[in-house]
Length: 200
Length: 200
Ligand SMILES: [Zn+2]
Ligand SMILES: [Zn+2]
Image (cartoon, rainbow over all chains, first blue to last red; front, side):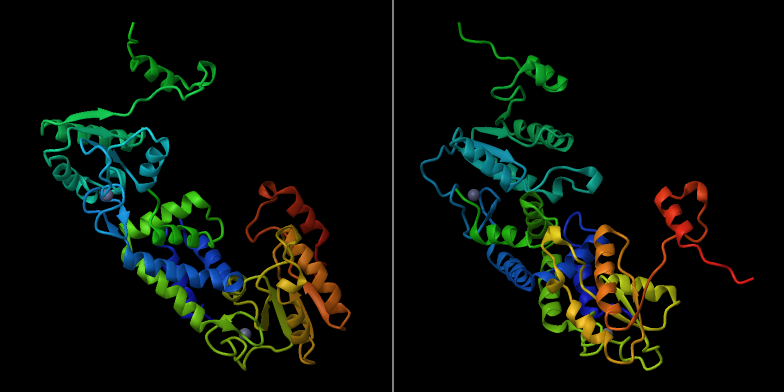
């Protein structure tokens, strides 16, 4: 007695999803087949549609259904600033602040030597080319403040400064409404180091 | 600026998978699109193939690509015993023991009032019909020893005994090679209660 081949193939295929091991793949397969065949069918079609329609914006590298995404095509935005983020979700977070009116570049990842992700696996060379268009003046590095995000920012800063660009990094510090009593010590330390002189 | 609709639809569709919330759905979608388009394509096809080819065995209710599964079609097995398990994976575990030669019935779930899963959501009536074929003499309840598996076993035992069938439950006790020193107290207590008289 063995598992029917199409069931085994489904279980194996679910393991392409990040964080899904053999046990949860099997649990997912049974759930799809036993409890949600409609959802399973719609998932299969959503994958095929996404693969067929999504591409990378030629300017900012985010996912888009056109050659150039909505933001890059927006004439009203500042073309002198380029905000570099790791993922499209980060871009959405910055947009939600309504505090930024420049353009973006989405790396689609971060340097992560432990996972075998080096400069060639994310869009570094495309960023360097993009930032060297003669219009961009400042590159704002907005990768995460994780070990990998920081390493990515340092690496990029060096390469971009070598091309004569102004490079900045978003600030670390206490959150708006944050109390010193509840800040973690390293964030508070950074808030001290990165203190701003107030205009008198 | 909004997420392209085919990307948003993929993220939403991934949430049909058990245990996948909005954050991991988004992580999964980016992984499929950015790092493993081949895997994504093969996943979509595996889902469609599984949906198209798998059905429930007419006798034991497990997933199969035929009307009757390999085990139920095997003339060499004992037709008087029916081992009831929750899921196909449990059936495979019992088969691996090589200690059972009867037939099976796969409930495809367990009673779980908290999740809204009642007798009508799992194959109870089909089991009762199957066990009443006049050939089956003993039903061996092999649901898990979880709260839900136990409740399922109790419920089934009552209904099956009312039909004049012999109903048994797999034993709880110490594992083979198990030491009292390392057993958890409730398992040890059950091992005492379910002690067997040894032939002299
Ligand atoms: Zn763009
Ligand atoms: Zn069968």
